[in-house]
Image (cartoon, rainbow, N blue to C red; front, side):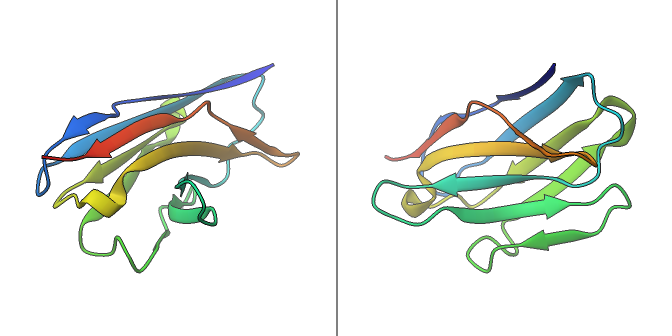
Length: 115
């Protein structure tokens, strides 16, 4: 069984920062890509950022220059540093981890950007 657990969400003022963490554990043979999606009510799910085991990264245009994804391969952990947060970043963020068989999802963590 595989568990993907996010942490680090919360309430922050516009312009502030948050750091999300996501750890994958359990019967994982080898993690390839890990990343973050978000989906606001009434909107399509959006890939926020992803990182491969080799360190290659991709970002949504809406977060480029503000968010940074990084990972600790030894511990199957990925981080999302979010700076200059905007109210439109408010939503639930979901972490995922891919191994050679399938994608595993976390339960989501709420990020709220509001004054």
